[in-house]
Image (cartoon, rainbow, N blue to C red; front, side, top):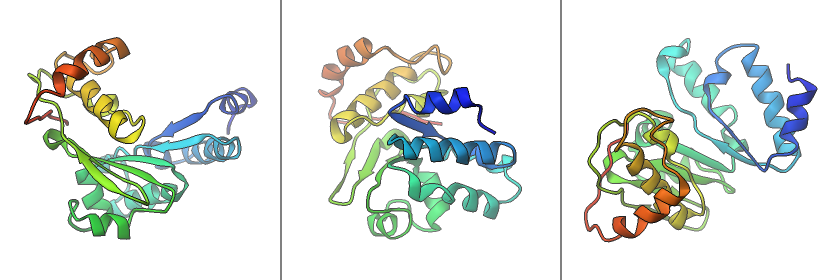
Length: 199
């Protein structure tokens, strides 16, 4: 159950981001859905990273159903290529399969591809942004650092953020500042072939 304090807080935010782990069992499921309802009614942008962790779910089918139960309410979704394959049951690189199954008309869908970068899909177009080559020390936190801003420009920012994150140890301590990312971007754009490992 949501406290009135948290409900009031949700009315003040512009983006509500969530994952699927809180959809596994009660009382988290009800709390998640109540928070989602408040955020949607207040006009928040609804962001979703399913963050599939199969061992936490009772079964693979339960995971698929739980993840998809709130899929159509999201404005922005970030998934990995493995998650797309799992959710569609098909080729994660087939654009037609992506548009046919997990896509809905108002969605901005981001698919991370580890060392290959990422793809993005909207109702009108889709494209790909290459990753940035760095000396990887620790991939922990790379997915958390990946943050959608404004499609192509935002994805370049997100890839730079992800690349810088893996050059240090840890998840939260390795997250770069905005200034560090902006300083790094001009150097990254000069690279012809790029990669960044993600867990």
